[in-house]
Length: 213
Ligand code: SF4
Ligand code: SF4
Image (cartoon, rainbow, N blue to C red):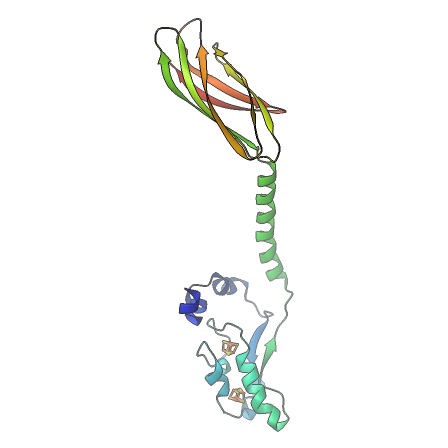
């Protein structure tokens, strides 16, 4: 798309160009025409002919400028023959407080996101009710555990809410993989409406509330 749109992309879609409207001030580094020497300009119009954005830099700073510096080279090719400096040159400074502040905000957001990724739990646990087992007072559940860490993880499955789990309650999940299985839970007192299934490991417990009809 970029190849097809060419400079039209820079002028209409590019978010960097739009950001310039916010960051621009009197010290912004720009490509500018020296108005003080306007009387000496050769009026060759080569700067306009070479500009890929189709603008006349002699009319001042324009939003469409993509700072390609073609106009500087064009002007230099004409003025060098006469031993004078080009009428178009870079003006302003690269390092400015406003630009530094604008750069610091996304950098801080990036660091916060990286910290979030580093600190988030490496284990996800999900469970859902499947069926009631006749009149036995037991219910069957399906569960899945995802180990997002780079190490094997041994988890203990438990239940809260007055019910007890039957069968194997300890599972080991290989690094960066998922294990799914079934759980059978029974409650001596019959229906409990809701219970909480728990997958716990070293220093953490992930809970999932499920129905117990
Ligand atoms: S820097 Fe490039 S886009 Fe900007 S005025 Fe000069 S030639 Fe045109
Ligand atoms: S290329 Fe330089 S000398 Fe020629 S018109 Fe543009 S500013 Fe003037």
